[in-house]
Image (tube, rainbow over all chains, first blue to last red; front, side, top):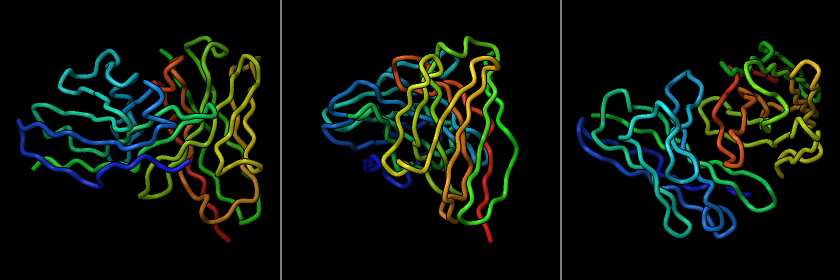
Amino acid sequence: QSALTQPASMSGSPGQSITISCSGTSSDIGRYNYVSWYQQHPGKVPKLMIYDVSDRPSGVSNRFSGSKSGNTASLTISGLQPEDEADYYCSSYASGNTLVFGTGTKVTVL
Amino acid sequence: QAQLVQSGADVKKPGASVRVSCNSSGYYFTGYYIHWVRQAPGQGVEWMGWMNPNSAATKYGQNFQGRVTMTGDTSISAAYMELSRLTSDDTAIYYCVRDRGGSKAFDIWGQGTLVTVSS
């Protein structure tokens, strides 16, 4: 099972919006609506930000939104804030009752 | 509140095995799958497998087949991950995580256990 493909880095100014892509296949993202996104600050444990493609856990800002089209999922961060600077990972349920993570994206707030 | 607390850091020699424990509290242990993931220094997150505490069923990632064993002890609400035939490539932080149920999304994370493989 190969890792899902994410851009290595993205950046934006405070207040801007950015969209992180997560590219998979018809055996994972394209087949199941079980895409999740995690935020990880340096030295910290990852935090669940989005599950089931577009649902937000309680307490997660509505500036974070998720979507999916075909074999590609996306995470959009609106109104970028300094505290959004972190690494972001997507994950997807995959065939064979397995799971796969993305390669990770480092977001920098300029 | 629900939490997962893992065992402390460990140092192993190549070829050895390591066992990481994960103690749960604040929720019904047998009601949620436990997954294990790892993160090598400066690298991304890698899924290792899951264990169903209710049935003891497991599913392992292809990269770990034959080398990993995931078990649980419902009497003390604990999960365990044992990885054998360690190499330096296994140096990583190992996390136990709770599957929130049905979504394969991880809502509760252990604090992580650093396993260092070095001769």
